[in-house]
Amino acid sequence: MRLFVQIPCLNEEGTLPLVLSSIPKQIDGIDEIHVLVVDDGSTDRTIEVARSFGVVHFVRHARNMGLARSFRDGVDYAMAHGADIVVNTDGDNQYPQDRIADLVQPLIRGEADIAIADRQTKTIKHFSPFKKAMQSFGSQVVNFAATTDLPDAASGFRAYSAEALIRLNVVTQFSYCMETIIQAGNKRLRIASIPVTTNAKTRESRLFDNIFQHMSRSGQAIMRSYVMFKPHAVFLTLAALFGLGAAIPFVRFLVLRLMGYDGNYIQSLIFGSTMLTGALISVALLVISDMLRTNRTLLEDTLERLKEIQYDPERVIPPAGPAWSEVRPALDPVDAEPTVELQPGGADQPPKGYQTLEAADDLVSDGRVK
Image (cartoon, rainbow, N blue to C red; front, side):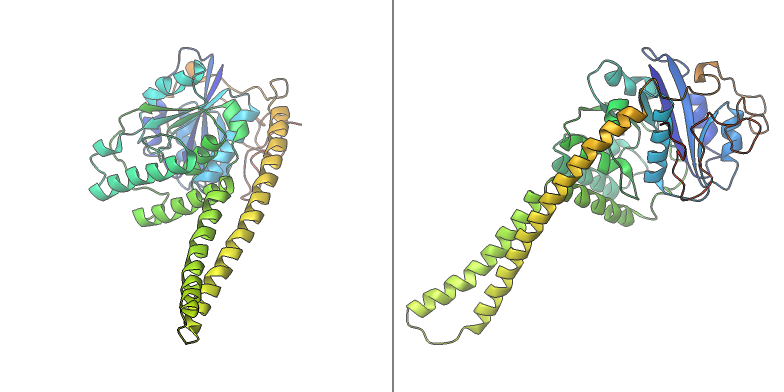
C-alpha cells in the first residue's frame, strides 16, 4: 500500500523542517511512504529546504493559486503516481505529523474512506472564545449539510483513500475542507474522526485575513454545496414561506369582503401578489436546481469512470526517487542537492506523461496518463 503525504506550502522555509522531520518513516500496513510538497507560489527557499530533506516529489505553481487548487493538484499528482492513501497536512507545523500513523489506520483496516483529525478546538490556547464558538458552530452547520457527526469539520489534517478521492470533485476556489465533507456525507462515504493535539502556533493564517472573512467564504462554500445536493430543502422551504406570506393577506381580503366591509385593501393585494410571485419563482428555481443536480450526478458518474481508467494500477507512473523511509536529510539542509530533481528543463526529467506546474493556468498534469 502506497501513502503520499502532501504538504501545501506558501513561504514555509522556517517551519517546513519541523514538518518534514516529524513525518514517520514507517507505518504498519503501509509499504511505501512518499512526501509531496505543493509549492503555491512561494518566494522564499521552501523548495530548497524540502530538497535538502530528501523530498523528490513537487508540484509547483508559478503564482499563488489558493489552498483548494493546491489540494486538487497535489491529489492529481499523488493519484497519478499510484497513491492508495493521501494524507494532507500543512507546512506551518500546526498538525502533529507523528499522528499520521493513527490517522491512516481506519483506512488501512477498511473501516473508513476518510479520516479527519479532531483538533479539539476548545482546548487550543491561542484560540479566542469567539473563535472557539465559531469553530463549533461551523462544524454543526457542516454536519447538518452533510448529515455527518464530526467534531472538527474545519481541520485540514486528513487522510483520504484513493476510492474516496475518485468520487470527490473540488470546485471551490477557497478551501476544500467544507466542500469535501459535504460531498462525502451526501455520497455516503464513511468518515472517521481521530482526536489529536495541535502544535504551538508558528504564524498567522495565510488562508484568510480575519475570522469574519473565513466565515464568509466558508459559508459560501457550504451553501453552494448544500444547494447542489439538497435543492428541495432550500427552495421548497422558500416557496412555503412565500406561499404563507401570500395566503395571509389574500385570506384577510376575502374574509373582509365576505363580511361586507367596504374598501379596496389594495395594500394587501399588492403584498400578497408579491409573495405569490416569490413562491412561483422559488418553485421554478427548484425545478432548475433539481435538473442541474441530476446532470451533475450523471457527469460525476462519467468522471469517476474516467478517473478509474486514468489511475488504473497498470497505467500509473512509478514514483521516482527513494521512498521516505530511505531518505536521510543532509547535514546542511538548505544547501544540499536533492536525490532526484523533478524540474522541467533540467537534466533529470519527470517520468513521461507528467509535468510539474510552471504556468499559472496549466493543469497539474498536462500530459496525464492516457
